[in-house]
Amino acid sequence: MTSTIKVNNIQNQCGANIINENSNTITLGASGDTIALASGASQTGFGRTGTVDWQTGSIKTATFTAANGEGYFCNTAGGTFEVDLPAGSAGAIVSVQDYNNTFDSNALTIDPNGSEKINGGVAGGELNLNTKGQGVTFVYIDATVGWRTVAGSDDPFADAASNFLIATVSGSGNTLATAPCCANTKIATFTGPGSLVVSNLSPTPANNEVSYMVVAGGGAGASTSNRPGAYGSGGGGAGGYREVKSPSATGYTASPLDGYSTPGNRVSLTLGSIPITVGAGGTTQAYSNSSSVAAATTGPAQAGSNSIFSSITSAGGGGGGSGCNSHGPSPAPTNMSGRSGGSGGGSGARTTPTGGGPGAGNTPPTTPSQGNNGGEGTCSAQTGAGGGGGAGAVGVSGTAGAGKPGGAGVASSISSASVTRAGGGGGGAGYPGGAGTPGSGGAGGGGAGNASSPSLGGVAGTANTGGGGGGSGSQYDNATAKSGGNGGSGIVIIRYKFQ
Image (cartoon, rainbow, N blue to C red; front, side, top):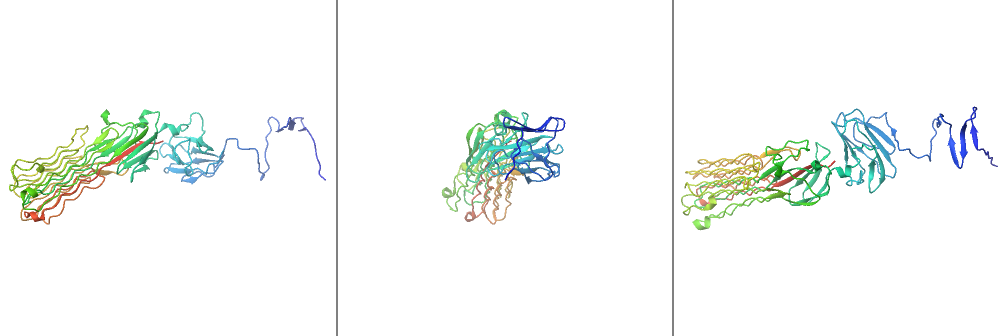
């Protein structure tokens, strides 16, 4: 048998209601009272009031996974770290707070679970808290929006999905990665053709202006073209080098060729797919061991191909000029001359003062210059060829018995590590009856020239540096003539803030 007690109100000794039933609403406590659960008791059915339980006994200093309903004080004084949000469920809530005003120097990264979103942004996209003293509360809504920041009307991330660029890359081997130094920065690297696909722009124009580096393919080093073949051939010029560091960029040092001060060099992205062209390196011409002058006279070393990003084109490096001697045809063949391009090819060595010269760099012209002239092949017995021009220096002119180095490239850390690119190819050596000295490749991927004994092929420029190929050298005996080196392919790198 059960017992039933029926009352409308329960009052304290002073006559105030402490339990009051009125129209199916039950009120606990009177004004000024405190309702407390006994130690060890739990409550259900009351729901969460939009607050969290702050974990004051566990200050976070390293990456951890948050739990629904908890708030955390995060101390980044020792360096940046990450808060991994739990799997989202409707109504889940997590809060974080700068422990001691260090978020501005070491940001706190918020990482959603799997492919879940924050503020309707890109799936799996992280969020950086980098404001001193900042605190943010996250509430999970649904799969469309994901975790919504609800820290208040002054929440700097309330519009995180629309305040910054969102982009992806296409094309085999091309990558998009977060910069190691800066968790709010992406680096898109194109080592081959592809596209940068922009799906969201910032309402702040400065955030759409990107940093970039565009390097074209390097020119090929030349092969020896005429019997008896004792004359070194010129090194290929480096691919044209163009770079801009936008004012909003942080965490790296640009090369001396930063062209931001020239307005025409600046690139602001637009919505849609932006095709990227990465220039191939030039190929060297065939060589001939024929005793026939006509058969042994070959075409010029090829120039590298252009690299293109948006309105920016870097010109392929010029091919090197072939060596030639007095036994060749008269007038001397035009393939003795280095070709013009981003950087110019070095000219071949010769015994006649006419018929050859180095290629011009910065062709077509840009500001700042995208490259330098090639070096001159010497005009004397025991001749050496000139090195190809580089982005940072001209190719060195040949001397008796010695090919000379290609011009040096320039260094930039736009890809995070400092890398030197766009070095010219070394000139080939020519030295009848003995071993001449070949020119080294310019710093930044330039290939070395060919020694005259033993006769080995010129070294190719390094892939994805835009380095020029090394020029050929040969013995007096035309039977040992060899090819020059091919130019190295170019590269395109784009750096921007994505949150």
